Image (tube, rainbow, N blue to C red; front, side, top):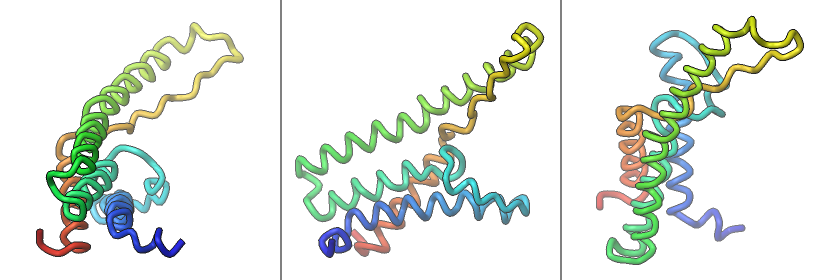
Length: 149
């Protein structure tokens, strides 16, 4: 178990992820004076914790294993897929959910009395600014953990 807590790359990635997720509670508190603790456990929104964590992971691997290592190549490729998924695929899925929710409201009168579909979750992905903010948090975590690189 001591090895787990000695893994600087893993701890840096986790710290970046948790910091970004924590900001999802702090930002609405400051901007809108809304305390939304449930945001700690939700996907989507500002900033992208997916991006923060994966950038910190890939960067930490680059620093510790070498920027020309096969492990960094895997981490970088994985990061690209995660970021693309967060910004494009899951963002589109959230937009589809909004349209479907609207259709369900519009056509509610056609459903059986006993059938009441639950609204689909719409906050799934990220906008480009949310991804950029997440990447910045990941880079900041690397800088704090490993120093200037």
